[in-house]
Length: 211
Image (cartoon, rainbow, N blue to C red; front, top):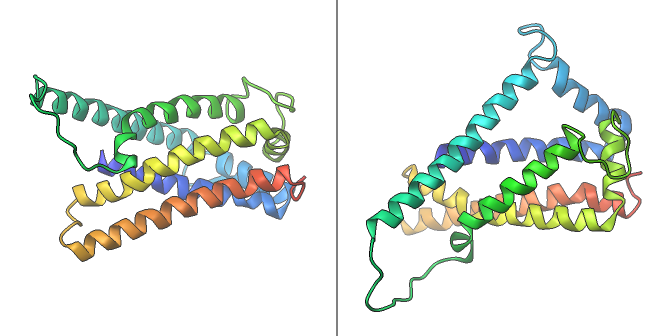
């Protein structure tokens, strides 16, 4: 779960960087989108093949991550088959309490996001076959979609804030109080960076800066 979680965080950082290319204009953004689909690793592999290999890799990471979460949840429930006689207050962060149901929300909104921008089965302001830049501009000119996106990104970042720290702790980096402080600080930096980076483009479209 830790390894697949870090893979997904790495993907989000790269995806965030790609989204920011919208500030460079339609040509730069569309060129980047086309490069991802056709040119990456060419001529080592045929044009257009990398994106499918990458999608299969990311799908495997997501499935393994969800599978690990389900397995750990089952183990946690099996470890305590009866309720405590006396209830105890257990100190938990807000992020840790919402990790499981937050993951369900993320999965549902991910399907919605892919249906819009990858499959183009759902259209808001653009026609099927529209370019990448045209799609995002049409999408985020609508305040409800920016708000929905903000909720999604917010849940993602809360999930990551806890998951980043937990992943490195699982992998043995939480060796002292100082290390714990550093990991916690890095987790906040990554979460805030992702939230600001992902929301910059939609807010700019809504404000008319990107059009």
